[in-house]
Image (cartoon, rainbow, N blue to C red; front, top):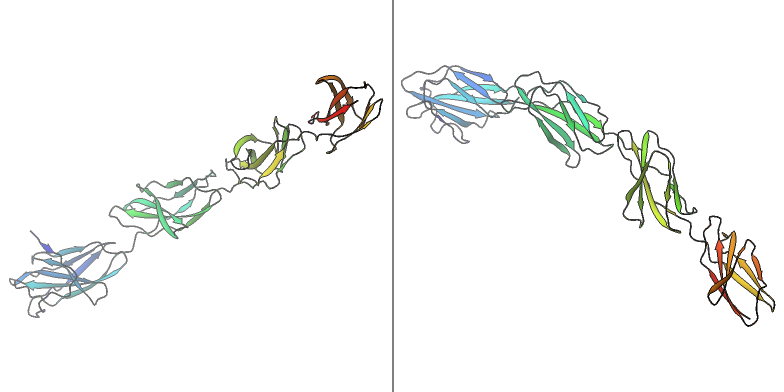
Length: 384
């Protein structure tokens, strides 16, 4: 059985080298990317018990990495090394008493890392929040798979986002990405024995942009029982989403339309509602929402202002509309809480000649606008 004793970081073997101890004459090497194999002609002398192998990274400080307790061994493999790096080795025999010979030196360099994949490109999917990367499989059959890396802007470094476990797989789809954001990708191949290649070239890909935000939304305040919204068309937009709120805080989707206007029918007079609108393109990407605008339905006309001129034979009413909306006035004449007559007047004046002495009359006067909205009444009492 061949026994290797691996020691810690030390200098030369503890005993001083003896020039009379037969030494190794030839030391050959074979480099891998993360390993170096050493080969020598065995020293088959009765006094020889084995070999010391030492390694250094600067040709100054050596550590013993193996003590081979058999003079018949002629090979040793040093593993877990760094690709494309120079290492320095010493090999010396030692006697049964542990006395080493003068050392044989060797300078060896590990092979370079695996070459990068030869081709990487944007798959150009044109889908919301998705980027597709295509690449050419690595020609080296030692390659097992690929690490897909994306640059993390917040951390300022590359992060592995996927592990493709087949050399012949040649695409990756990254999902759940932000609209209109620039992403950077690269690919690193890895071999069956755990070695990695140089990174591929970096590709920069931007997800599809959001459509333009609507900036000229208008809402009416002068229509009866409805609010009309208008805005300019946005190029390459297939529909608009209308969001509404009755309190200016939480918004809900009110409607979707392909037009650049919308009528919101409301059953209340003087009702306020807040609106925001977004546009949606052919890829289903929604723009940022517009600024908030407030619309309202038309309130009831103002209560009319009434002045009276009383004389023994009649009562003259002088009527006016504070908000200038009245196109007609309705005068209800009541006696004992009963309507005894109803007069429609398009004039600002009305004379009631049907007056009886010692009677009390109550009048309720309403203003009506062009939309047919009726104000609350102005009440007037007259005693004769």
